[in-house]
Amino acid sequence: MRVKIVGAGVAGLTVAYELASRGAEVELIEREEGSGRGCSWYAGGMVAPWCELESAEPLVCRLGVEALDFWTRRIPVAQTRGSLVVARPRDLAELRLFARRAEKFEEIGGNRIAELEPDLAGRFSRALFFPREAHLDPRVALETTTRRLAAMANVRLRFGLDAAQAEGEPDWTIDCTGYSAKSELPGLRGVKGEMMIVAAPDLNFSRPIRLLHPRHPVYVVPREDKSYMLGATQIENEERARVTARSIVELVNSAYAVHPAFGEAEIVETGSDLRPAFFDNLPRIIVRGRKIFINGLFRHGFLLAPALARQCADFIFVGAVAREVMRPATLGQTEAMQLYAAPQ
Image (cartoon, rainbow, N blue to C red; front, side, top):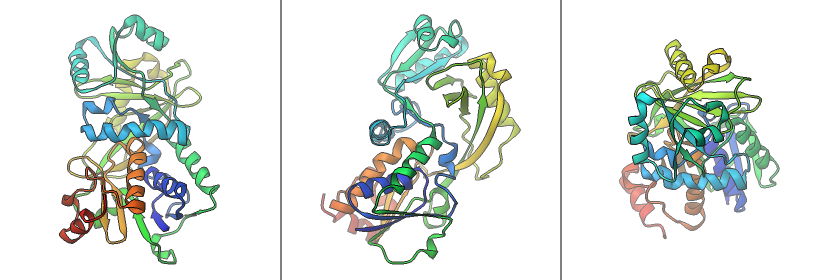
C-alpha cells in the first residue's frame, strides 16, 4: 500500500503515523520547511474531551477521548493533570451552565482549588475539575511525531515541496491541508484564532485553567519555563495572520482576572491562523475516487486528529465506513454510492 499525504499539520502527521504503523509505504509532503507551520503551531494543546461538551457536539467528545491514549501512550507528550474551570462570583451562572453540559468532572470549593493550584488560593470559591483530561505543548508534539516518522523505514518526509511536484502514482492520496483545500471543498471556511505566549515567572500553574465569562472567556495553558499560552478568540473572518490590539487587550484582561501576576508578564509571542471548519464545526473524511480529504477539525485539531487518522486507516485497509464523519452530504451522489457500498 503506497500512500501520499499532503500537509504536515497535526492531521497529516497522525494519519502518516497510523498508516505507517500498519505497514503502508508513506510519503508525507509539506510545502513549508517544517511540520505544523499552520494553525497546529498556534493551538492551545488541551486534550479536554469532556470540557468541550460545553460548546461542541457529543461527537467531538466521543472521538476526542481517543486522543488521551494517543498523546500519553503512543506519542507520549501529554501530561494528565486534569483541567480546571473557574468563574468570578458574578459569573457563577456561567459555571453552572458549563456544568450542565459537560461530563466527568468534580465540583470543588476554594480549599480544593488551593490544593490543586496554590497560586489560586483565595481567588475563586467554586470550580469544576476534570481529573482525566490532559494537555501538551503542540510544538513538542509536532516535533516528536515528526521524529518518530523520520525513524520509520517505510516513511519518506519531503518538506519545502509542492504536492504537484511529487512523482509517482500512489494507491491513495490524502489531503490534510486544512483551509488551503477551500477551493476543492465547498462550504469550508476559515475561523480566525489568535493567541499569545507570556512568560510569568511568579506563577506556577500545573494544568490548563479556563476562566468563564459571557463575552471574554480565556484559557491559560502552562508551557515550559514558566510560560503560558493564552487563547480564546474565535472570529468569523479569514484574515490569516493579523493579530488585533483588541484581542490582545481582551486576552490580557481576562488572564489578569485569573491572576494579577499576568499583568506583569512578558509577552513572548503572538500569533494567528485560520482553523478550517464546515457549517456545523464538525470534521469530515471525504472520499473522491482514490483521494481522501481529512478536514474541518475546527479548533479541535489535537483532540480529533488521532481518531480521524484511525478511521481513515480503517477505511483504506478494510473498507470500514465511519458514518458520523463520512456522510453522504459531504460527497457527490456517485462518490456517496461508492462509499456506502464499501464493506462494513
